[in-house]
Length: 171
Image 1 (cartoon, rainbow, N blue to C red):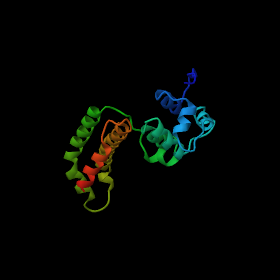
Image 2: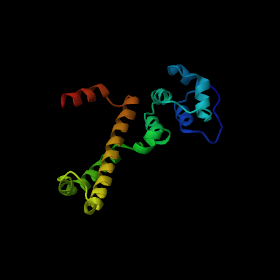
Image 3: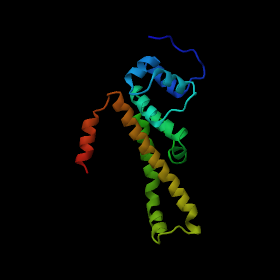
Image 4: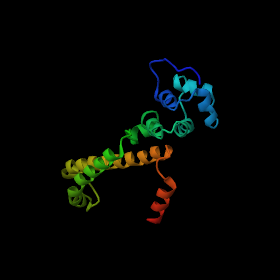
């Protein structure tokens, strides 16, 4: 194995590679079309990674959260529309999802009242903004669960084929 970097200000890409115990050369061999020198330039922030680079690194380093990081921090569209998702334990994700859903449930009748005429009037804005914020929390919890599934699948700790087949059966 190559020598370990002692650089203090490592970016997320270098940290993820090193967590897998990979040198740039070994990582490059496991990726398609990304050289060790390109990895180095990305890690030293001399070049911006492309979405293709990020997908390759996410797969190689078994870190699907790199895709979320890139979209929420480096992409102009993602910066506006993609929230950063923290990878956490399944139990925490489930509890957060249930808590968010429980907060939404009593608000559904008010949302129906607001939506009934197809517009949001000034007197409805406050309630609509609150409900919208709560729906964003539900969405974030769902995204977190999907990221957990992707990460767990990349570590071969979940049978993704069986999960996908079961989801397809339920359609």
